[in-house]
Image 1 (cartoon, rainbow, N blue to C red):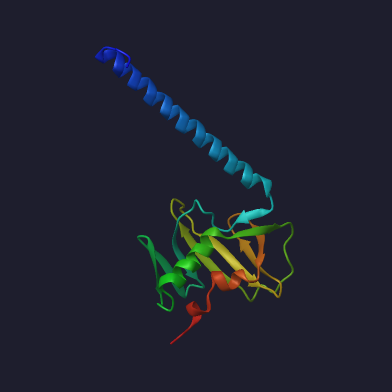
Image 2: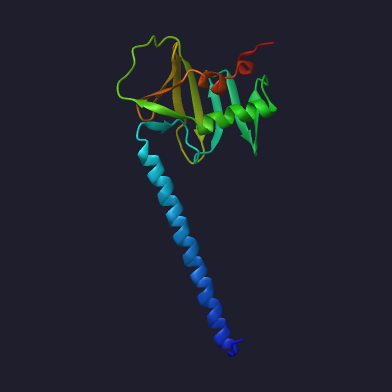
Amino acid sequence: MIKLSKTGWNNVIIFVVMGFILLINFTNKKVNSLDANADTTDEHAVAIVGQQNIILTLTIDNVIAIERIGRTWRATPANISGQALEQMMMSWQQSDAELLQQAPDIDRQFSLSAKLDIAGKTEPLALNFYATDQQLLVFKHESNQWLALPIAMYGQLFPQEIFVTD
């Protein structure tokens, strides 16, 4: 064992802790830079909401409201709850869509509108959804972008249970 005075051991501990902090910062920067590179490689994929954003409320056609209650969700009217509601909200959080270069030619009368309140943002995220035979088209108002999702995503974002009326 190395013989050091109390002051000497304090200095050793200080330098070891500083080295450990630098190691953590260095590895964190490496991991974050890898994530940033992964996001830029697929330039046509756009997150609808984004995993880093926290959804507080979701309003569909001003009829259905889903709000965050702690770590769970509550729907009004309560047509959907529990695991089905969790899955629905996870789909909203994690969905990536393909960016369309030009606006599609669709009938804009038949749309489903959604507004999402995102933590830290003053304005809600406004989206319009249009279902076609092959895909689900999304118009993102804040960025004025058209996005395309597989038509199967319609059932994940808007499960039938939420539209059931008693």
